[in-house]
Length: 319
Image 1 (cartoon, rainbow, N blue to C red):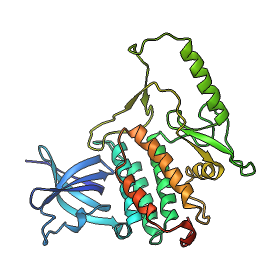
Image 2: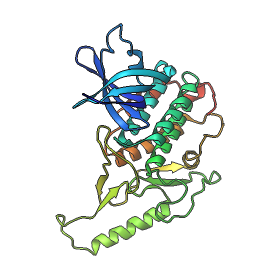
Image 3: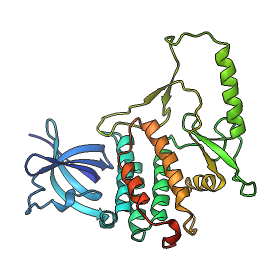
């Protein structure tokens, strides 16, 4: 006889199974990431059909099976219907769901991740429809918080090479700093040039064959990154890399990056969408590097925001 257990969880992924069932990937407070069958939910008269939708929070009674668990009862505690009514919000929510599935552990409590994800989904839902730059800003804010919870947030307050603080300089034309994913975040351009010059000189002085044993960095050292369908921690191993400057960022972009660690974004007028798009791409590359997989929803982010009118014509909402 299969035993049952209770869990409170949010549906992050759904796929058809058989003729009438769905296989749900659920982030639960008590047991982390689980996969469970929602039987008969694709039938019109299903009692739990609506409870199997994406981003629905349910109190669940689940029967443990040999290969897959089965949902026997579900009571909805919260849902976010406005997310599916706006393509930008939906894309941002799916983006965050992918991140959560990458870093969630199975068979372990994930209370902090559960509440953090729900908090940011709630904030996205409360934005006005077609919020444009506000949606991007909240996506970046949430992504940074998820990275911080995993223990792998990028360094944006100081140079990752020298540890010297970085302050945006709006008075100097064309002022810039760099961002290097392999270095761990923002870098002073002079420090980066010095480091790469030293590296080149060091390479010239070494006669190491290409097939010699190379050092590896295990990333993240303190994070809780796991495969979406895995049952435990999976660190991503990267061969020892030369420092690569992914892009240069201006004072406005650095200022926005430095605000992302705050609990709430400042209530400021919406800035140029170009800055938020730039920040999202920086974080996307960083996320994909550390989680070792692409963010599939990012393609929808690109296509959706490329189709929007110029930021000058956007309704100037606030973040």
